[in-house]
Image (tube, rainbow, N blue to C red):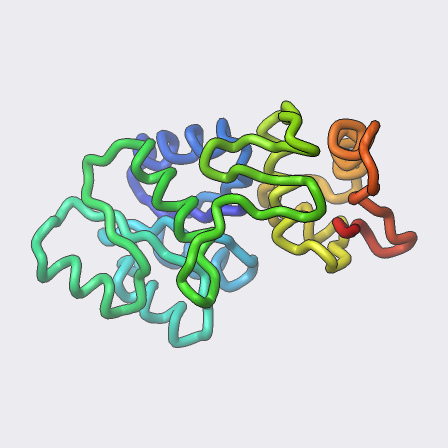
Length: 223
């Protein structure tokens, strides 16, 4: 997933960023509401973690503005204020979830995963499957023909993105935007290398082959 953190406290921002990066996510950060608005408007994020008390544009105003502009990315608001009134205010301006500081990273990570997997119906599919390939998103495990396949965090994130878009060709730019962060150099061959890593683990020795190269366009996961 590609996640945006808008948080002006450096220690809190680094704490969240380091934890999410260790899980294999692509993470961008902004230190104020103005920078957060620019990034959120310029990129497609799976989840936005948004602090309420921000310089320049506070989190409530930013959340409302993003919704008015049509940005539908799931938003988790962070705040030190835990009154019912504060929570209601955050939800009314368009936030999807609300977490009070201090919080555990484990809880934040679980909420991020839940929001990212929620479809339009509001249901969460924790075990997406194509052919005999199964992703256990909660345990972050992968199985093919009931055999567990061990992936690195980045390989898992790449497979999760391909699975999410199964049947649809995804370009290298799209993969870079969702699996790597804003500082990733799209002119490197890292994406091709990781696709090959994934193909060797997911397709080698199995039938049918699921990861396909579409010449001149990108990759597609399909039977």
